[in-house]
Length: 165
Image (cartoon, rainbow, N blue to C red; front, side, top):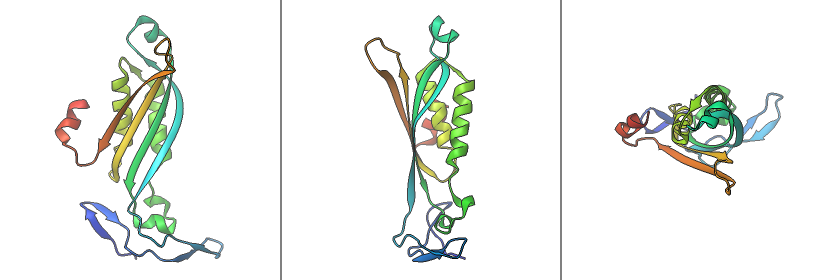
């Protein structure tokens, strides 16, 4: 079993020198990272959904397009260097939760929508940073879109986080 270092309480870090080679399921050798890797960054780009967003009567009556961009930085578990699926961040599950929230929700403000999506993206314990930007195309007559970005940083004052939830 791999030895783990702990730099952040409760977060397992890969050992400093991962193995230099490994074998695929068919027995063929494959390269494994030779440099230590502590974190990864996942991007979900241009997730196009429809939701009820706005407080004007026409906005409440008809769904509108939104475009969602997400960045999630998370601490890697040592098992990902050995193809252990259970040790990976499940970005498909996170994206599904975002889709369900957006498509089934009704929001008066873009700020509320972005904050709710950010809460989903920052929920897994290994997430150290998350950034969500949501565009509302056609919100202004002469602009391509209006967008809002919110960020989460692990370790930020929890009292601030509680105020926005």
